[in-house]
Amino acid sequence: MNRYFQHPRHAGATVVDGGHTRFRLWAPSCDTVAVEVEGHAPAPMSRRKGGWYECVFPCGPGARYRYRVAPDLAVPDPASCYQPDDVHGPSMVVDPGAYDWQYPRWSGRPWHDVVIYELHVGLMGGYAGVVRDLPRIAALGVTAIELMPLSEIPGGRNWGYDGVFPYAPESAYGHPDGLKALVDAAHGLGLMVFLDVVYNHFGPDGNYLASYAAPFFRADLPTPWGAAIDFRQSAVRTFFEDNALYWLMEFRFDGLRLDAVQAIAERDWLRDLPARVRTRTEPGRHVHLIVENENNDAGLLRAGYRAQWNDDAHNALHVMLTGEGEGYYANFTPDPTAALARVLAEGFAFQGEISPVTDRPRGSPSGDLPSERFIIFLQNHDQIGNRALGERLNVLAPEPALRAAYGLVLLCPQIPMLFMGEEWGSRQPFLFFTSHTPGLGRIVRDGRRREFAAFSHFASEKTRDTIPDPNAPETFAASRLHDAERMAPDHAAWTAFIHHLLALRHRWIMPRLSGAHAIGAEVIGPRAVVARWRMGDGAVLGIALNLGDAPLAMPDAPRGRPLYILPMAETDGISGVLPACSVMVRLAEVPDE
Image (cartoon, rainbow, N blue to C red; front, side, top):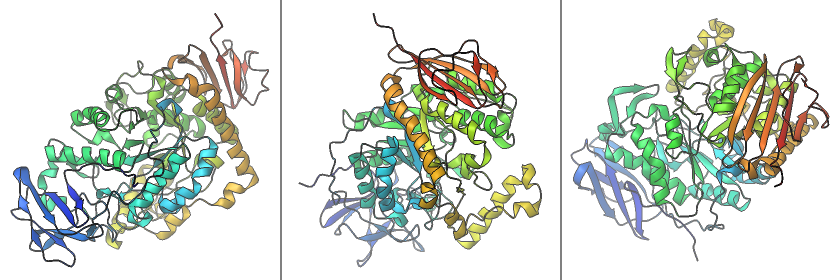
């Protein structure tokens, strides 16, 4: 029996039967619309209430089509499920039943099991390339992979945030069924799959919406990427809500990470989305919604989002490890250690205080939230790739301190995330890359170089000219990871180090994580903190971290079973001294009654 899943959508092409397809388009700026299926005469679409156009046409899966929205303009479907000829080509009708799921009963994993591995599908060789690497990733101790955005992008080289077809998986990586096969294979290995989705803007090339649906955008509200999407419109809200359910239901993703939600002005839509998803996905499935939010809006976490990427944690640790203080790191240079202590004790470092960088209040109180509502990391695509030269921490930070920091990140009760290559300490850069038209590519290149003019190292135009051109194929190629590096002895040893920490997390932290809350954290030195958490079973987890280059007195050391101590012998750590570049993790279990 063919085992497949489908989510009914308000917009786009829906297969009615093998020989008929229903087409629906929201085009309130048009007086007439026709669908043009290749090999057939154009068919006028009936105008419906609210600016919708609809018709049923005698064609089936594989048909290519456009919408004629003006005498001189035929456009792809904004709800296209496949763009085989890129963003300006025709859309293709896709049969959701063509893929036969091998693990249809997979229901996901609970949140306390999560260890995230973020990856870029294109750099790994497309959907099939990721499938080939899944066994290795699963063996590391990762429990979820997170794919950078897959919405169809111009060309085949892009981070994915320039997508213009939110329903169409990037064609350069393979057919949509290839993406389903990736999700299916991951489930077979016990891995969840999360997808990064972009609901705050469209890319600069291939977005035709304004020509036939002007109300899709707000003329009164700019964003860094152009006019804001108007979530006050019912059709717009439905478009993106359907999109979330499309990925979760038809492709069986286990969760979504919503990009930069601070750029979505209508907070009520964001607040309501988790409940809508819960009511429309199958009972018993573990479905997780994650946000990235510069505003540190703890209210969204209380409204049902599972967790937020904790940039505050990364930024404090990065300043402590590298000493860098330009750009947004200036928010943390006054006292990064105090910021880290607050992150460990309360979630966010900024909870309404004035940001020195923007001179505006940032954040809201978060101390009541469980620790697992925050995703902690040392590296991700943004924090590496938004550097001018894409350097990873293994290039920027001393190894002894970096190893100690991983002890904190992978064993604390916040949810840990790794970025591709991080598990073997890759020194390969991850750069910003695109494949725009030559004209747009030059604009992106020059704009990116101007952005770094405020940084001391790139103050001169000559130095800025050394920043790699995002549109050059060589920039994409330079970001590829290499098996030869991964297999080198020193990198293999790093992999064993990460694997060991994750094994400890699986054994000692995950079973106790649900409901864990911080007891408190304190600064004990210039780059040293002690933090404690009451775990879900009542045990107390204590972590002492010293990223400095001198030992420190620690009169109130964590007590209990030593889970991980670096670089001390396991019998040490209670002498009252915390060595340089060290971490101590202990668990005081609940005494027997």
